[in-house]
Length: 591
Ligand SMILES: *[C@@H]1O[C@H](CO)[C@@H](O)[C@H](O)[C@H]1NC(C)=O
Ligand SMILES: *[C@@H]1O[C@H](CO)[C@@H](O)[C@H](O)[C@H]1NC(C)=O
Ligand SMILES: *[C@@H]1O[C@H](CO)[C@@H](O)[C@H](O)[C@H]1NC(C)=O
Ligand SMILES: *[C@@H]1O[C@H](CO)[C@@H](O)[C@H](O)[C@H]1NC(C)=O
Ligand SMILES: *[C@@H]1O[C@H](CO)[C@@H](O)[C@H](O)[C@H]1NC(C)=O
Ligand SMILES: *[C@@H]1O[C@H](CO)[C@@H](O)[C@H](O)[C@H]1NC(C)=O
Ligand SMILES: *[C@@H]1O[C@H](CO)[C@@H](O)[C@H](O)[C@H]1NC(C)=O
Ligand SMILES: *[C@@H]1O[C@H](CO)[C@@H](O)[C@H](O)[C@H]1NC(C)=O
Ligand SMILES: *[C@@H]1O[C@H](CO)[C@@H](O)[C@H](O)[C@H]1NC(C)=O
Ligand SMILES: *[C@@H]1O[C@H](CO)[C@@H](O)[C@H](O)[C@H]1NC(C)=O
Ligand SMILES: *[C@@H]1O[C@H](CO)[C@@H](O)[C@H](O)[C@H]1NC(C)=O
Ligand SMILES: *[C@@H]1O[C@H](CO)[C@@H](O)[C@H](O)[C@H]1NC(C)=O
Image 1: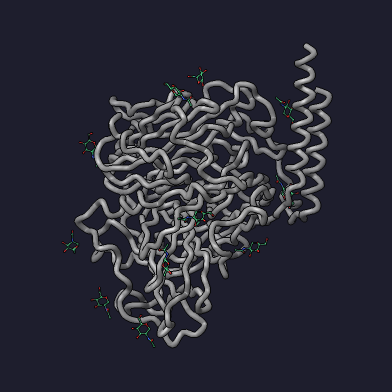
Image 2: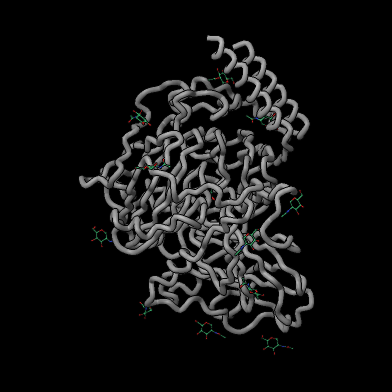
């Protein structure tokens, strides 16, 4: 008994210290007013989702361990959630912004996200996760800088540039949703946007007059960190800058072995940082290109984004043909080999001052194995749906995490199959039972005809292998057990597999999904539930006091006084947070 109470005193002490550290980490505050605006990125006026009147939305700029507060005001006519793709909500799936963990923010309401970017660095983006809204915008960059005491593995760049690329439809997200609900394909996109703008008129036949394009201004001789994100609906894009090498430096929170690429394939949901030196003679401006990949290029010509790289000493406009995409129509291994060449720099510091490779993932024993296989859309109960291992996910009426909190039964099933089901596909709220502190191997097998990229919230995973054909036990012999990149979104080529390893150290309920918006919308996702059997408020933060209620718990929701929704100041939110902490510390002492 004595030793036990000593232990609990010790734990209170430790949690006090960690809480205080948490409280002392700086706060960064943002106000997001999410609304429709009319814009014509491809020359056709349409309704676009803006944040604070801007499309794309403002960038979020933070440093490791910052406390991020984002007060989101929903001025759309439908529910809203913002998710922070790639930013790991350590210990708090309550802030994750997906339907399995959070109730949506109703129209006219506001909701304040608060989370800490604990032990993380890197380039990510945020976007609205519901109702196909990302197809209408609402996205922006999210940067987590190194703390000043931890060196980055390259010279400090002379500038930091975010480039958001993505396919785009002139139909809005409600129209696209209607197409999918009607059992049809979306068809070819109408173009590719770069930072919310249409293509530069590089060819007067292909690009109509009067389209606003993006210009990136640079100084000769300088080196910039260019962070590129594919925020689009479903198209893999090849990214390149005419006459300039892209020195790859970081991928979704991990520093890579630095290598030059003339172009790189960026799949939906993926993020890369390149170091680009302005080493050309500026005889003209240069093209920045993002073009559709693995398609018939003569049919898909219009699905090309073109922006301009403009040196301050430039002698004229860019002209002539665009730089060539990879010429690999008959070589399906080119892109995969490029993906395999992206390696972790195991000796660089990450968010902490120790080598990234100090976590020897290759020597850890696997505890859970899941083979997840997707297929082209199928009909289930008269609906056109997508599946993962034969299960088409149905969002629960009450979010899974909330249902657990209130000990509700029957909201979901913990029975997601570890191998693809062979029977007829079904629609269910079936999720993966993760083992806390386990080490999970997931094999993603793509039986569809186009690339899918898979993303897991709350975690970065090690990409240890990919190849064409069916994965077998023998495929493990090809795994990279040393410097596979740790990232949050990986591509899986059609008719191929990708293997990832995940260290299940983050308690919560975490979305595992395809980032291709159409496949996701039609059911290609699940969740991984990770529970610490010894529940406490250290491995998982308590439910925030502003948590929204919905579904079977909607009677707990207090109405929101919409008239009070004015903007918060940083001091006020800090004050409330400190107050909360004090309540928490006092309550844990008297427990
Ligand atoms: C979307 O487009 C449809 C027409 O296709 C239009 O009726 C509707 O008002 C638009 N909605 C939004 C929210 O932009
Ligand atoms: C982010 O903020 C830091 C200061 O905290 C600043 O030095 C840096 O330039 C900012 N980065 C961007 C991309 O705005
Ligand atoms: C809504 O915003 C107001 C201030 O603008 C803030 O006081 C309040 O806490 C916010 N509501 C929620 C639920 O976050
Ligand atoms: C890896 O990181 C180290 C430490 O910062 C750096 O010195 C080295 O140049 C990097 N190696 C490569 C190949 O990028
Ligand atoms: C513009 O594109 C069209 C269609 O692909 C092509 O026939 C034409 O040669 C291009 N024009 C120039 C100047 O490159
Ligand atoms: C990358 O290319 C640049 C020229 O653009 C060159 O100066 C640099 O040495 C190359 N770096 C590597 C690692 O190949
Ligand atoms: C600038 O570089 C281009 C291509 O590298 C070359 O064709 C051109 O002659 C150069 N112009 C000058 C003025 O050096
Ligand atoms: C691409 O489309 C064009 C025009 O329809 C067609 O003539 C050509 O055969 C197609 N190419 C391939 C490789 O399918
Ligand atoms: C992994 O499992 C093997 C036997 O299956 C065992 O010998 C080894 O010690 C285990 N390694 C670790 C790190 O637990
Ligand atoms: C989930 O996994 C845990 C072990 O991690 C096990 O104790 C529990 O019985 C499993 N639950 C179900 C429903 O399979
Ligand atoms: C899909 O799976 C079937 C059965 O395993 C296989 O015959 C077929 O080649 C696969 N197709 C793709 C594109 O992976
Ligand atoms: C966690 O904190 C909440 C208050 O925020 C308290 O009600 C709860 O009992 C705590 N849980 C544990 C396991 O300490």
